[in-house]
Image 1: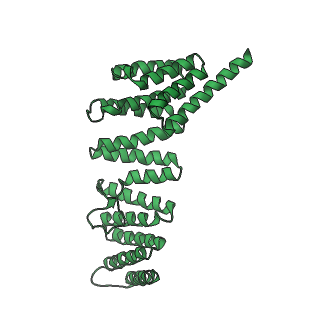
Image 2: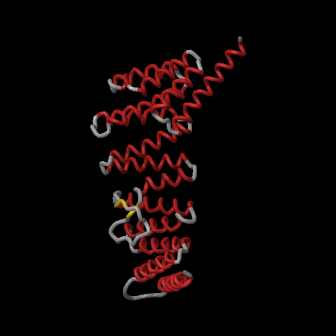
Length: 306
């Protein structure tokens, strides 16, 4: 590995010398770019990820000097995938630069590939996910949900521009999940309801409608507005006539009734019954616990008054 790193350092120095030299013919930036790319490859072989990332940034800067924005975007993306192993902040920063350039030149579609470290062609960039979505996932991993939501929103818009509505809605679902976690319930409700409406017109997606309406209904419960959840259930029945006969509707109706009656036990039993047939995921459990805690507090307050 040390030999590969040494070779990379030698090539990087050669590139720096090229840039400092005066030349009458050819392009010193083209020559330096070729050397930087070779240096970065040697750093990667030697698993010196920070050095690889730094050299890819220099490569991107050379391409910008040559007004080759597509190649520069590729280089920033390569820098990001090198930094991904060692420096999350640098990784995100370089991905943002790559995304900005791709948006500027209008090349918004990437080829999906599960191995971002393989040799890339100069005409396209390969990613695990579309750039905006990848940035969003990195921000989520860093627990920066506000930023994650911003980039999931960008990714959704770009997917829609490519008529990839399924991918767009996957991003929007993430936004709704994070919004609800941050108690932005109305925002989450609007997203889930909109996705449900879209799904109803698509035979392949209809099966997911009840799940989206359930999520929207849980967010309604979290808002603590009894009238709102009643109105929502009526609206969801009109939206999807089959919803009224579903277990999802029954759960929401039972939970709404238990809240109206201020009955914690009834609330718990409704959840247990549903969970025994369809396991509730961590997100739903977290939100329902919030509702239950509010109901308990209200019950305790009533007991104190009596």
